[in-house]
Length: 80
Image (cartoon, rainbow, N blue to C red; front, side, top):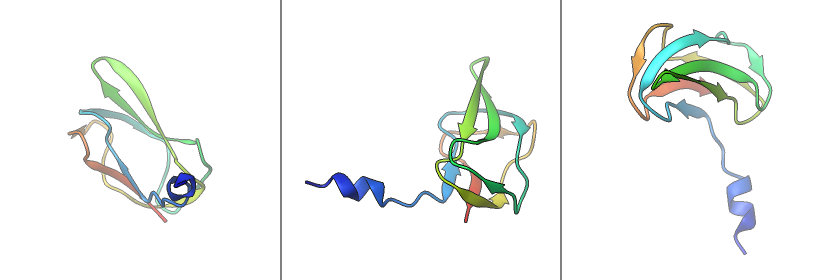
């Protein structure tokens, strides 16, 4: 019935869900993270939003810096 198609989807790119400012990056390149672990904090409209890891993975690349602004759908982090 198509229920398994979503379960096999591989997410390796973490993109900004909204425009904002990067307040804190809690991971480093090469670090192993667990599903649900906080990767970074994005401030948008005076609210802090935790960006969480969608799966167990290794941080391949970080494309943002603390204090930097991002637009919606900007690439934040690449996972392996």
